[in-house]
Length: 606
Ligand code: ADP
Ligand code: ZN
Image (cartoon, rainbow, N blue to C red; front, top):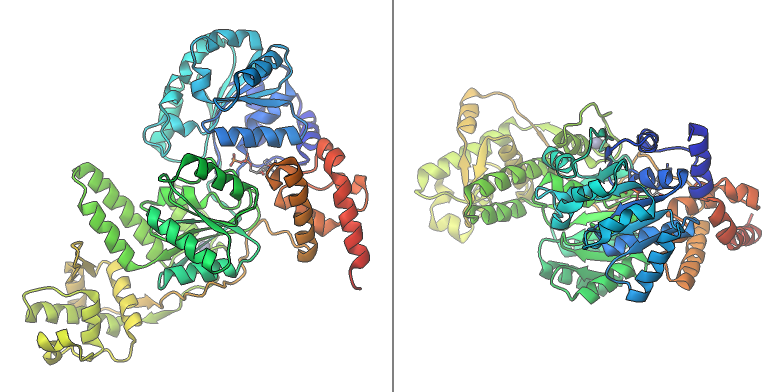
């Protein structure tokens, strides 16, 4: 099919008038019968890469998908757009499975979503030639790799399908960026000379921020309250924390539920379903939550605790803003959290594992403490450079932290460590050091005679929190460090001693501010529209979705509603121009929306 034909099909079925980056190239290759490996970030539009070819040719497209909930969701979405799609998995009754099989033999479906374990059942592969399979798409292909985060042993057998499907192109899709996982996918799926496509991993509609973690539960409640209409995920390290944070949010009048691997699977599924259907606004989760969640309108991802690696952080934040609308990623950070995590790592027994974990944590801490562009730091981790700075969508670019001449402060801080070490046989922690600097008359200071040191009380010009922030920055600069034992102590690094002797000037940055209301980012994806109309359209969508028992985004995505509220179409022709409105949705859903818009326009005070 030629380009014009593909674009017409795209508009007719999905209501989009252009391709996202690489979609067109991938689709063209697939239709030419080539194997393809597509590495697109979350929200990059991977599904379309196999859905459009499925519609552009006859025969069946097999879509291998690891999660039952995801399959159902995707099939419902396709059906709402008028595409003949179905799925097979263990949730179906024998009768229902048989009925679907009959449909498959009769060639009634364009797409079949299937779980790998179902596909690999004895006898299934042998029947494939009768189903006129023209394309095999392996979604979430990183599941094949043990290095990935969601290893699925069943994925390993998928290469065995090939002999049963001669001449049928395979495509693998993932958002996992690490090199090791990429190599595993190509090798273990036995892709044939695949065309490899890698999109930029930059997510232009996401804003990245760090907030100093002070009173985390209160901060989280305030954060969510400041965003009264929005859905989000709060990631916590422990199951207990997910429950207590959800509890605090509920006490603050916010609908929130915990989600973790320790909950009854039935409860977990219900929770996920409520979230997808916008019946609960916030999920407090461990990292067990997310992979199956393709909810497009997650407006924020907040990390209550420090993630273990940049990779994990990127994947988790990636669940925000799949639909391309501006969304926020926030991490609550405290140096104490970093120390806690270091302690966990030191308890590991395998030295290799320990080394990797330490290295990953170190990079995460650098990300959190850096005053450079967050986006740049994240993408640099994946080997991407050449970003436009300031990015317009991170705290450091939006509200650059003030810099100041920190020479004297650093001299005081570092020489105080030095003097304390000289005076006592033991090291002291950050709190004690700051007490000495600010001349506090605490019991320990007196007991240990630290009020007689020459550095006692020499730092009254800064508050305790300021000194702590100065101390953290000096650590980040490598001039001093904290030991990793439970009672961590501050030590002067050789570089710190050298710097003290050199007497060179030093520039430091002011600490981060902890406001939860933040400057409006200057990022992509914003669609300016009347918010009251948008809210009304959303309420209407919700009613229609409830009637059909599907998530609201199956009817229309938030983006489509915002376009609708901005353009306010008054007839079907104008409605058809709204992005995300294909022929089927125009027919099925446009009436009530056109009516609601007309009513709103009539009532609006002029
Ligand atoms: P991924 O699987 O890569 O995370 P999806 O396939 O779920 O991404 O697509 C993310 C969102 O982008 C979906 O809401 C989808 O409808 C939308 N989308 C995909 N392709 C296009 C396009 N060409 N134009 C506009 N929106 C698109
Ligand atoms: Zn930035």
